[in-house]
Image (tube, rainbow, N blue to C red; front, side, top):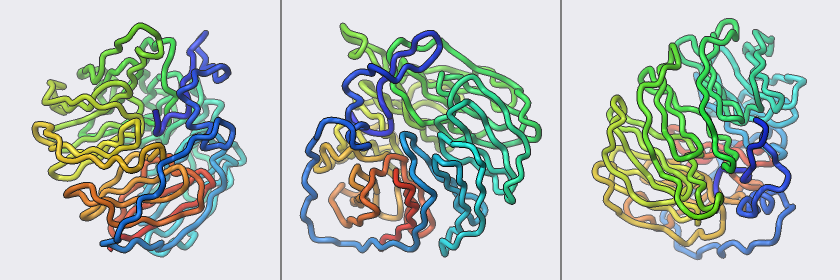
Length: 387
């Protein structure tokens, strides 16, 4: 098992109980230096056919036991750390364009539309700030906020740690709608939030379900089974969609732990194709293909239409890679030692590698116009170019 989940947790009495969580979450303890030693695969020796270089770097403070995802909007990168600092970097130069001290410990990534900055706390609060750091509103939800709030068309959509999805008024923070569903007793604790696309909100849940909601009302449009729980024990039956789905004009795809990668019609939810693969880290796509990081840290490429398997890169075993990102001719992932690996989109062969600060890259990297952006658990923010 690997990827974006922090650990397996028991849901008891409506609360996420971290103590006594099941052993497959040990990889995250290894990341934080508290778990049993696991030897990752040795770095593959290869002849680079591309050059990766750091364009700029900054720091926003450690993530502690959280996972923070930055956001890019209106020529700026917004990133946050657990201590409550939010930093705005110029996306081209990396120059610090602003700092906000929320004076509140944060627990998830940053959301922004360029004017409003959003962040969540472990106490279940959503903070809305302007660029100067002035608080616009603060909303109290039911549980910790582990993912970045999203803002579109006057609605802030937030997922809480107990699996509920809220639609809040972007001007006031007042709740417009709430979606909730029953959760299994054992599930993956995840920092994946929601995807907003074409006026819909798409959310993956424990139990292998992918749900499409309307942005304005939160009504269910369709629901699909990405994976069906199976097995004799509760652990074997964990089949959670714990990473963000991806969507293009016609198709939306998601992947589940101990399940499948499945693609559906984005409007109707009717299935297009599915292939057996287990993942927590997540997936990405380009115009032709879909790329998945599986639970053994292999990268697998499928054709977007039909799902035919194209290639598999399995030389990163045990390195607990992040979700992948596409940049130009390449696919990139970060790993538990802070390396960023670039492979060819054509055949999955290694083309370049670059080190950051030595701490895990858990959050899925973001695409830049000339490379990628990563944030490490030590709070390092790196813009990396690949040529």
